[in-house]
Image (cartoon, rainbow, N blue to C red):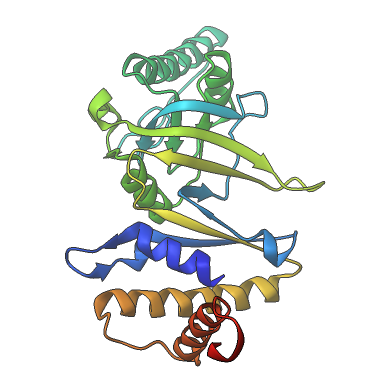
Length: 261
């Protein structure tokens, strides 16, 4: 745990300014496995799965469109009502909606996106079109997670769909969906990002209480490592400095035989 905390802090540290932004370190936990299975991910983990079960589970050299706008036709700002009294009118409305979804998916394809991450949801029809056009998507991703993904991948958050361009796409070496055991729990791993200064500590444990306690301990360790970078004249506590000195002296003594030792 101590090694993971130190590596995480060094990964996001600004050594020139001697400061560490702990917001760039996301601490995530999932019940199951052993505490020893805790790992440091140089990227972001999202507690979501692909929007459609038939979409690809792994994308290499991913180009990610990060959207905070709904993936659906726009709704009028004022109160409105649509009167449909014939089958033909209903069919026309349905085709118009389908065309709008098609245009949105095509827009993502045209700018080169291979994965769409959206803050909002989209209905089954849009999901079906995404599956047929082979464009993986993740929906209902939180705002904080979107910001971390944007930082890690070097992408820009797109608030209006019309503003989506190839320059605003984030880049990641690999994006994969990982399942855990026999449960239906799945998570999205975004790794080998363009900017590795956003990392995730992924904690495993036998129960929820263990994970909560481990998160608290990890946070304390991160704060200690951050303080050492801010002021490296601090001697860290718990007797660890003395133990390190003792180990070094003992290792040096082993190199000398007899009384000299």
